[in-house]
Length: 280
Image (tube, helix red, strand yellow):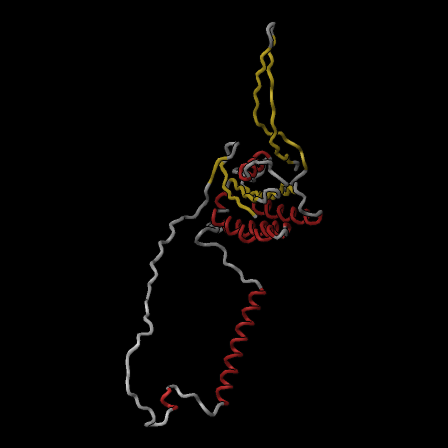
């Protein structure tokens, strides 16, 4: 499919009226969108972050998820937005390039801009309910570190995988949200470290028991056990205050009443979008 990249441009018109005594010039201008035709499918890597092989694999993954579940999944990279607001740019890119599938044009678009180091998600149609605010936060927490480390291909593939997981979950009637986000999986290296620590603790316990059985003389619990009977004579005694103990009870914190769901806004074309944005 041939898509169009939306580029903001500035147009000016000048009206000149001449006369016998001079002339008057009136100028007016407006911001419009010019369209530059480029061959982008569901991947528009304008910042050239991926090599040819990575582009082919990522686009195949985006196509597979989109066509299997009827929800456009799009990735866009830009070198700079030239001062545009990332959320506005992402919404307009989705609308003016005619993304979205089905009657409600369901879809999710992920945008990053390199100069500004910003990312943005724009959702439309049924995807607004599929990708809730809490769900988007979970997603960016999972693939965001790849972007920060410059591992863009890995980050985009993780985004596509999470989109598929979220769409499948939404088909059950309960989209991922505040109360039912995916369970965190423990990486293999963490399992290895935990096993190593547990093994070390068990080894200390076993060796400690073995060492205790080898002792024939045990320490006495009281100093009096080391004294000879009748050898201590106390002529004077007094009480000395050494310390006091204070017990504090934490004041219960008020629980947050923030609800789930998706917040929405209106794009320049009048369409309703969900979404979120941040830095990487």
